[in-house]
Structures are given as C-alpha cells and as structure tokens.
Length: 79
Image (cartoon, rainbow, N blue to C red; front, top):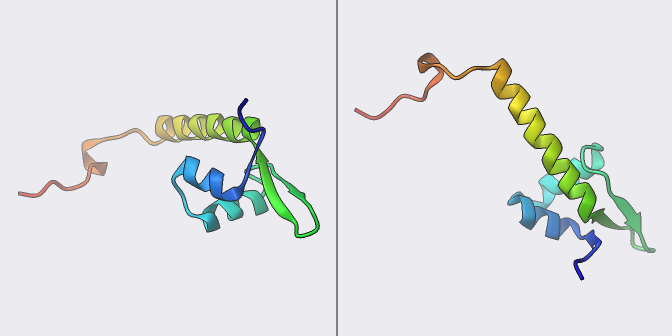
C-alpha cells in the first residue's frame, strides 16, 4: 500500500529539488501540507503532490503558449 503522506525530504527527492525549495513551496502555499506532532513535522499528502505537479504542467504550458520560442530567443550555439 502506497504511503498517504510524504516528508518534505521525500517531496524534494520526487521533484529533484532542495529541501529548502520544498519548504518554500509549502510556506508560500503553493504546495498544500499539514504540520503534525509536537515538533511540527511537515507532511504532504501524495495526492496533493500529484495535483501540484499537474498544476505546474498547466502553468508551464500556459507560459510556453504566451512566450513562443523563436530563433531570436534560442541560446547561442558554439561555433
């Protein structure tokens, strides 16, 4: 049975980002999480992580549509 809740370290590993970046996503409200226990351990529900990923796909798609790729915006290639 898959785990329902993930630690911030688990989320960081899944997204291939730092623990600090994960904490920032939680603290600014982009990634819903709960704080549990006397020491206030953060937990992210696996379903919330998946929903966040899907939202980020949509945000990225919207960005790409509104900022079309052109030869002028392409990185310079080594000669």
